Length: 146
Image (cartoon, rainbow, N blue to C red; front, side):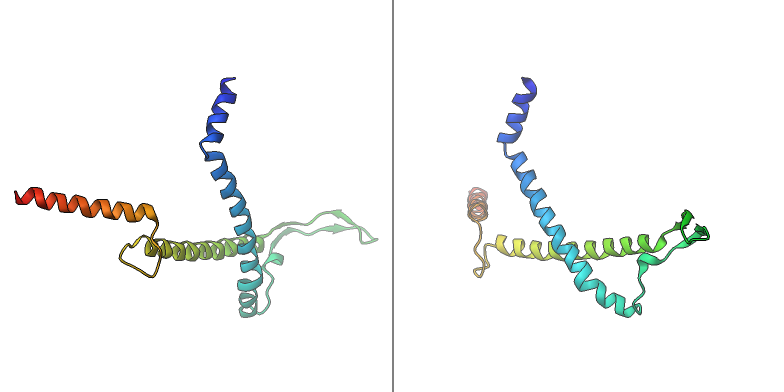
């Protein structure tokens, strides 16, 4: 019963909903980033590398053994360094893309929190905090002058 009570408190506080929303948005964002990397950024890189497919790059440690009919008796043993290089490239491009998106979002957030900028609607809580800060500064100057 205690476990159920703790779970209920966790769910009611909104943590579970925040996590669920974050996971859903993250999954959707993952699809966008995947398309951006695979369909937009990698094709020009492929042109620059003369169409080299990194997925096929590997170091063969032991060749496959075939019988007289051409059937594989033992599989090839190879180190697939090309797949690793492609994964690192994907990671770098995804990291760079996420960095640019977060930087853009932070600029928008900073602009929205600037109470002197009239081009963007400032959230009410930020306006109230700004008014409180100004009132406290006025009060401090009045107290110092006495």
